Length: 86
Image 1 (cartoon, helix red, strand yellow):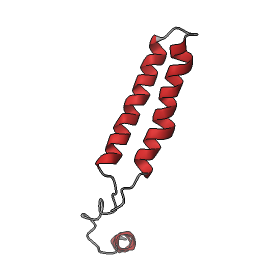
Image 2 (tube, rainbow, N blue to C red):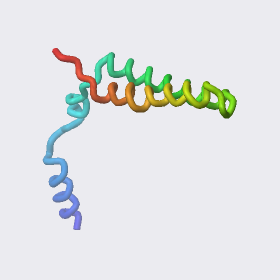
Image 3 (tube, rainbow, N blue to C red):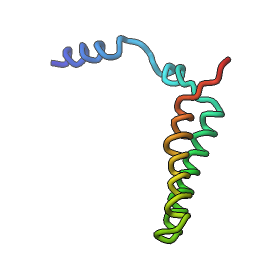
């Protein structure tokens, strides 16, 4: 029964040492992290503005949704997609 476990291990690992291969395809640069952090800040500010504004104020109905939209729909996807040309 122990040999079956060894066979399954070989099936998935192919006797390769993959400890250094995890981040070789990682294409995130400084710009990606900047976009991501600015997006997170935009989202946090959007929720803060929405929570502190009156129910039917400009703050809650216009400014907060724009901040959330920019963070979720523009900046965070840009951070995931953007790749610097070398």
